[in-house]
Length: 259
Ligand SMILES: NC(=O)c1ccc[n+]([C@@H]2O[C@H](COP(=O)([O-])OP(=O)(O)OC[C@H]3O[C@@H](n4cnc5c(N)ncnc54)[C@H](OP(=O)(O)O)[C@@H]3O)[C@@H](O)[C@H]2O)c1
Image 1 (tube, rainbow, N blue to C red):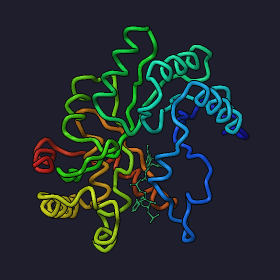
Image 2: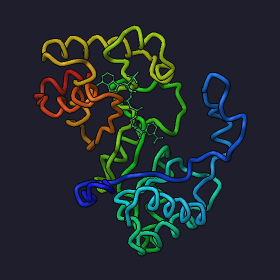
Image 3: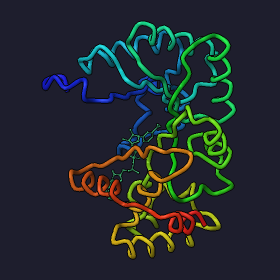
Image 4: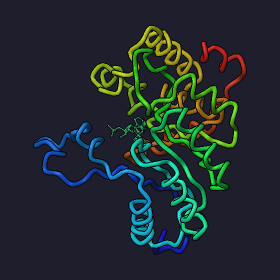
């Protein structure tokens, strides 16, 4: 982007607040992160932290503005008014165009929006959460995963768009062996999981696509509106994900999948 001079053709999004304070205990010898330690020591969404993070991002990216800037992890310890006022200042300075929030519970979104309304601060337009075709297990208590209440809230507030991260749950839909072994399934092993996987696999075969492609297509047809945030690691995975854009689902097919 910087070298090619194509900045105006790129919608640039990045995030701040979730960098953990450096510690030798953050990574184990095999490269696995200690998530509990990371969450306890993340830098948070204080005003100074965000101002410095945005300036550092702009410098690294070689641009003068970010199109969409997320608070990466909702910070329950910094007063929301401090965070929002700082972000409003960054928008007023032209360094950020739109705001987003990630890993956040619905009641916090409502509080954020009310504060913005009261003070005339720009409100978030995007909420980035883990969201896919499988439904989270009812026992799962995870602020990062969108559940029924959040979907209801988003359906009632179409000025806020759900950006779905890990939309294909790390590739588990296309690979039963990966599914059996992957930690991501801990939040999804529930009463209807097997039935939904079986239906998805059957319908994908009928449509001549992979189950992962059908999940992406289903998300693109969703109400409330969902933008799947794909995570391809190879050019082939990118190509495969892009093909989901051409999968058109009928009302009947959508109803079967919703089942
Ligand atoms: N806000 C947050 O806290 C948060 C958290 C997580 C992610 N994100 C964002 O969301 C983006 C996507 O998340 P994610 O990486 O977890 O998404 P994902 O698409 O669910 O998982 C990516 C993994 O799935 C596999 N994969 C990707 N495309 C595939 C394809 N076409 N067919 C089969 N397997 C495929 C690859 O596994 P292999 O590497 O094994 O091939 C890849 O590493 C990230 O880039 C990140 O920016 C945000």
